[in-house]
Length: 467
Ligand code: UDX
Ligand code: UDX
Ligand code: ADP
Image (cartoon, rainbow, N blue to C red; front, side, top):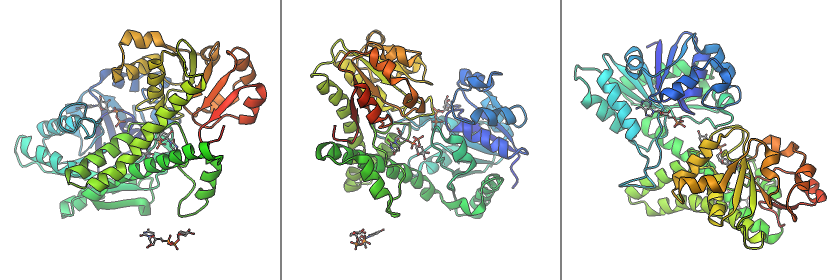
């Protein structure tokens, strides 16, 4: 089957960039991205390409090329479903905040609503592709809804799992040049035909050897496993960073030494203030929940340690600021450089900065933040979501600055929370001159030049070094 029309439900960090690249690479396929959030769709359609709702290097060019040609953004979900042979589900699957599995299981209500809508609208056979990260065996729930809630006139649905492995900040190169594309589907002839239809889409730009096909459960579980392994590497190196600080070893030297072992490899060994992002924590909690559901307590406990270590890393970073500043930050100004969970993105979900700020606000610090891409409303929304204090108190305690020098002026300490490149090139002498003394820098990303800062007169603390 040759695919002519694709629809993607969910115009977020995954759906938007992924569909933009598919449209750019497959000019013969009409790709429509739909969302119930009208503001988001309006932003995707904005004439001013710098207003796209997702910031990703290179995304603007891809959208500019394909939009209006074969890439469309719309709020008319039903029309797009009706027109398409293949429908991607790319809606959010946050951790449940209520009821059974609260704080652990994935909340599948958006996926379920999507499936019900597809079932209601479809007038002919459809291939439905899971793009969102989902717990293993979700496909069977989706199939059940599709097969049993529709208008019952013999319409057939094939479900595929096609997890997305792009990382934010590098979404466009990751999509253009993926390490692999994974497609899981039914082992029946109809399932294999659906798999082939999607293989043919990717084969427009991805070499065939890199398109992997599996059964649907392997595909679903591989996504959770990949994220769990990546997060585990970060927690492992972060665990060593604390030991390095006590023993005089330097975590960067250790990372380099072990990374040269080809069995270990050099990537994902950067000690940090803790991993964030919408996937790692959510997916591991999900894995832990599934393991517990099957009574696999040792498996659950093993993976849960990755989260425990990450929470500890964020907490000890905040604690270290307080104890270094003579055990009190009450009334002191602490400047944050960075709020995003990593550089080159405006995404802040689960960013370590949120938790460090929350701890420091509890200690009555005044926090002033500069981030090159994150807007003030997002920062306040992140803090309000924690429910630690009132919205007014969050706005009193945390100031958002449009200029990094203004954020740092008069501060007692600077904390680097995101590894934005521009932080390295600031006029650090100028910053030093306008700070309270002693002037402290807590480099949660290990990106600044230690010798330069020490020469200027800063007291410099870096994750994973004996300071
Ligand atoms: C190990 C380290 O590899 C080596 O660098 C160090 O110097 C000494 O310790 P060794 O114990 O000789 O070497 O063997 P290794 O190949 O690492 O295997 C260790 C154990 O892990 C074996 O029982 C092996 O069967 C098992 N293993 C290894 C697995 O079960 N699965 C794997 O994927 C790899
Ligand atoms: C991740 C996976 O990499 C991607 O394959 C999957 O599709 C989605 O989840 P993402 O969350 O966008 O992508 O970013 P990633 O680069 O993996 O970083 C996650 C977090 O780990 C960030 O907070 C980052 O700063 C942190 N990190 C990463 C480290 O602290 N040290 C490292 O060495 C690597
Ligand atoms: P991700 O990082 O997985 O892309 P986002 O939260 O950025 O997650 O994007 C998910 C998008 O899905 C949101 O813009 C949300 O409005 C949209 N969405 C959720 N449920 C539906 C639905 N039933 N129909 C259309 N869009 C939906």
